[in-house]
Length: 115
Image (cartoon, rainbow, N blue to C red):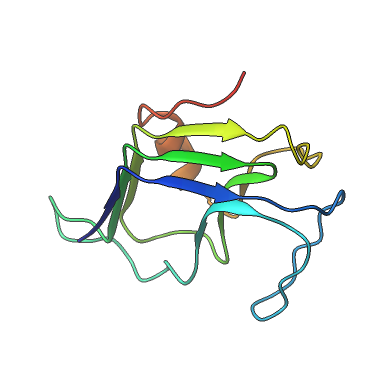
């Protein structure tokens, strides 16, 4: 039951194109939240592996990403995500990567995103 709250977190890249390497290969990217190895199943009812809430995230690339689809109980609620203007945003089809069903929970969790 790890809790991360009331922070300002910034993740920026100066690369203009995305290249995401495997573990140990940093590539050319940035993610406000990146989950590594969160694939060990759900927490017991009423518990969670991580609860990330009431933070401000600034990035010019990915909002949330993961090395593997997330199967652990991760709550990402009531955060504010913004795209940085300088350096300018990296073109991306989506601001989520390998989050699986967690993306729907994030979108429904009271988080705000740029329009």
